[in-house]
Length: 74
Length: 344
Image (cartoon, rainbow over all chains, first blue to last red; front, side, top):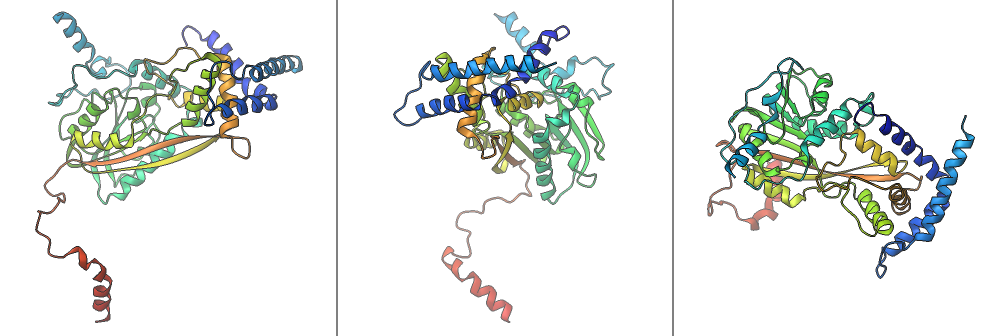
């Protein structure tokens, strides 16, 4: 928040669009969440990239939602 | 090494001494004498107080501060309820870490004669809410109260002590400025606050990055709170917990609200960066693990309310051993005795 706050404003704008994009990817988010939650059950062990596939799907959907939002905009 | 120590001590002087006289219209109070039990040489330094002041100033400068301060409003009104519950009026009261003054808003002139409001953020003090009680605003840090001993009948503090570095010392200072038979009523966040956010971030960071760092600041446990109050010299302690659950559309809205409240993390050990991937993963985990039926996600705020009194001769004390006149075995006969009296 130094200077005129231009960079911070841009980043914050991008961040504000996250909830909409996440709402567009409900299925992938649920799949990823279930995978992580399953690892917290007794006997499961959470390690890096345990749910990498689900996360890749979520990230692709997220990026696609961003492109759609850009196209659909003015 | 001696010159270095002297420099360190000077840096720790209360911020009140450094305010230029021209601004704010707040009364400059001379630095009080510090209490005999000062901070240990190895005082804890968990939070960056300078950053916290900047964050609170930023939050108070928002165009719509009331949009974010619903929690402080609610807890402020609950503390005012507790003040009203005490069948007494207080000529002089102090609010430590007042923010925009949510406690004063709910009190009236009969209960409190004059109110001192202290906070580290000057923007918050400039925009205090309307109240009918005459107030004096003071720019002061919770750990370095610039008041003399035995000044106040009542000290209140709402949701600001969880950012204090040396909590024992802050409580001792509060005890110091209280008059004998004065009371301290405080509220601070407890251990279970925002546990959903903490867990989601931990799981997501472990899965995405292989390890995790703390993003939620550490809170006091309820047992420790009782010990701290006792150590500070308070009598007749009461600590009770309350949970407020607020529903948000998602994790990002929760984080934005926390920043708007001025409750962003300012611990020294915080990680400066939160990756976009981790944020996305954490939001997905939060949604899946803690979601309500209508799709919103809850965030729990656990609040500890504490009441402590400063010792005075008039206060009730435990009776001497062996001075009992009635035995516990006769407890069961109390109803019969009172019924007998009524029928007479």
